[in-house]
Image 1 (cartoon, rainbow, N blue to C red):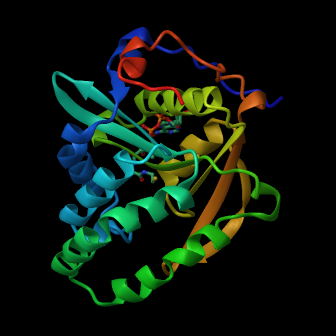
Image 2 (image 1 turned 180 degrees about the horizontal axis):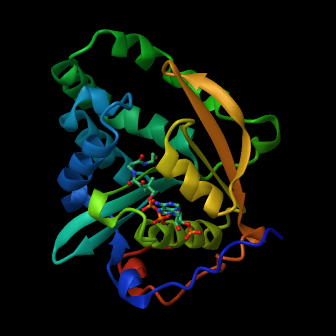
Length: 234
Ligand SMILES: CC(C)(COP(=O)(O)OP(=O)(O)OC[C@H]1O[C@@H](n2cnc3c(N)ncnc32)[C@H](O)[C@@H]1OP(=O)(O)O)[C@@H](O)C(=O)NCCC(=O)NCCS
């Protein structure tokens, strides 16, 4: 078992974390766009992002949490138990809305070329020894004033504990090789680097975390009542 720096959850921080729901979509899309504006989906605009989040929220595979301070969402995490399955459902159900939002938000035609690569994401982001990892942490972002304070660490923990509770044994995440903040955080959690791949014209790194060997996680943490309040375990 890898020795990590101890992570003692702060109940005050946990209290501010709850499940993401439809009314959060506008703010989440805004935060996503602000922090990850150069990512492919963000380049199609906030309207497109809102449609994506609405679509994901309607699938049973999606798992998202927000961090709220004084009634304002200051950060979020979005994950899934099976991303390709989830995205198929999103595109089947909301394809027409996504198409319209994407066309309206398109500022740079090269984005279209990269969009066509999307089906290859699932192939490229599967390292040979991570085929069995279906759970994924897709997006996480906090406003700059809250970064580097382990608040994001808490929301990671809530997502990973919940995925573990729901029967997942590992989680994967891809990020840009040059995203210093994300790489630092993932390494501090004991994520194992599974190699790099090129996607959307950028070098990406794939990480996998094995829940049972991560001493920061519990199979299920009942100390987060807010997070489970509206939660249907299925
Ligand atoms: C990626 C992101 C969520 C990381 O959040 P964060 O606030 O840095 O994460 P944490 O505070 O939990 O800290 C991560 C680790 O880095 C360490 N750390 C934080 N700031 C540090 C610094 N200045 N120097 C060295 N280490 C630092 C922390 O101690 C922590 O390690 P620990 O878990 O062992 O304590 C945040 O940078 C962000 O919102 N970025 C913009 C959006 C983005 O790029 N998202 C990722 C793409 S999906």
